[in-house]
Image 1 (cartoon, rainbow, N blue to C red):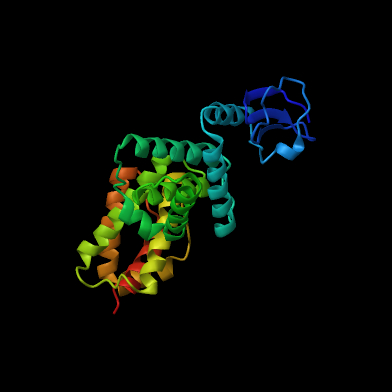
Image 2: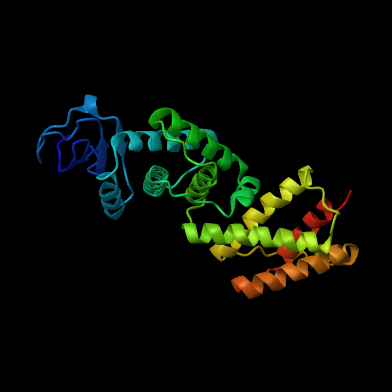
Length: 276
């Protein structure tokens, strides 16, 4: 492999055997190097293969100003997330999470506090990702001797969830708000009746997360089983009334029509979490 561009002393651009543009990172990899020089493969510590030239360009612009040790720990965090979740994660996380962590470190060094207003919701809705965020804070402290505030675990979790769902951060925050408000509607409809420690409540939250994803993706669940839907409506009228409030709220805030099938699923879940 030969160098097609030197980004800085530690990062160069090249092309792999499939002629894809790649970003290579390694201590001293670009030191006193020029376009056309051969790359010392023994110095390559990380190879980034982005899905298009635009993403490659954004990454190299960002990485040019970030110390290599910070890039390394971000790679470690992302790999840990992939190994833990065993899910496809959008490669954009190498840009978004690295940029966020670098900025968070700078804020700590300047003594600028930054709180996460969705800390509770993220812990509840995306607990596995939140635990990865906590582990990431530990990695940063061990590798860089910098202590990030606990709220950063939730911010890191959001970036991971965002990469899992392949959504932008604005939609991710809006989805979190939506799920939280639906839970508030259910709480208001059934005060003191919900067992938030039950497995049914955990399943309900999981359902709401996927429900919110479908709303923001513009997808609907349809069914022609009208007889079963009618049975549910007649049997669980209180829950149906609660779901109707949820439907009105979603139509007002998201301009999304909740299908009868979705309403039936919500009704069944609400019945389960309100039954002692």
